[in-house]
Image (tube, rainbow, N blue to C red; front, side):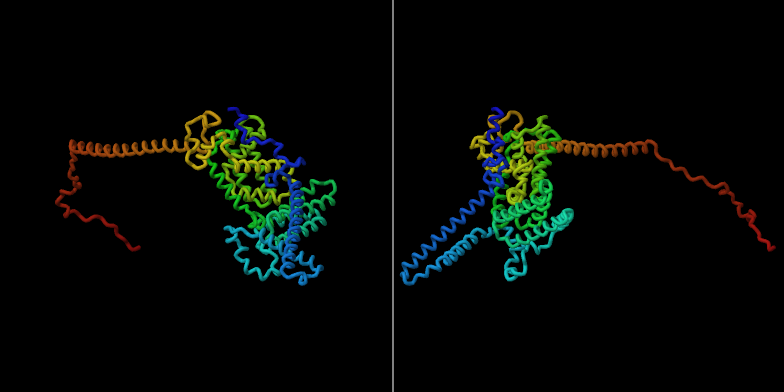
Length: 501
């Protein structure tokens, strides 16, 4: 089987990563293949059409209601013509209110039951006029305080424009605190509108200095999104949490996918390659710990660069885009990053759009979205497996490493996932260690037996020597004058005498 046919389910033409409208910017699966600019234009058009359709529907309902009223009460009891527009507005207002309530109905999740806002919501209803928002009155974290201080220090270098930027940023955060019941798309539109307005004003002020405007916008994004993170990340009005669980279960079910099935040109037996793979997995997992969309993008970029390094070291040549995407899919399957869909949606909704449309950040992010889409649609044909084998592997009835039929595999030779191979090697090592331990135990027992026998033999030899050469204890020798019987006749010993001087 050729390498080209092996890649048929994974290969993505680079032109497919660009916006479908042909503007030249990178598209996004979350935006139906459009870039952020084209998507906003389409979204605004769709919203205008929806508003017109709502007006038309409201007028139709009003006419039907008037016709029913006339038919039931007669023409004499109809209301004057001048009140028609007022009734139409009232009916449309009720219609919009009902529709808004349906859109903003909160999903019952674990987060809802245990979040402080949901526990204290009934008590705060009577103080809506005094308390602006839980997100504003919430005690700031250490990170939030540090980001706020850094933002103020940065704005001091801008002097007068810095004060205006700080004033507008704080005002926007306070206004967002009163929009907590909006849907995720509405929140995104508010943030993107603020970015666009701020960027336009800065471009007018710093004419011909787009780099300086980009630096300022990066600081504005960092300040705003750090303050709004808890209220806009995975909002209760969205189904992000549901998508997270679905993606996590999907990746867990694909744990059997091997590196050969994805045609990944990476050899994890090489220490440098293995180290790059571990760093790539760490970066993609660390993305969830960041608050700022730009920082999350930085994690994706760092992960991608480690992947390119692993491919380069393995192949001894620069990596291509056709090698990058399968390897990125493999890294995502191995890492199973937490809240992957929520992080992707958060970046899509609240990141500075210029970062997603161009540059390496936009390219790597677009590839990550393609990788997730591939994982969601992964089937047997993409892995060169029959539908029957794919279903058996997904259900856990069989495992590829136990399959003896080499025709199933896209490559000959070793067909074991590196992780499974490592487990197998560890089991063999443990088995050999167990044998060695048994030998050590037997040697220790033999040594103990030999020591006991040696002790007995030494005791026997000592006893034999004692029997052969018995110990004779001679009487103790007497003193020199012991037998002198005339000692009592001896004069007394001389004693010192003391004379008084």
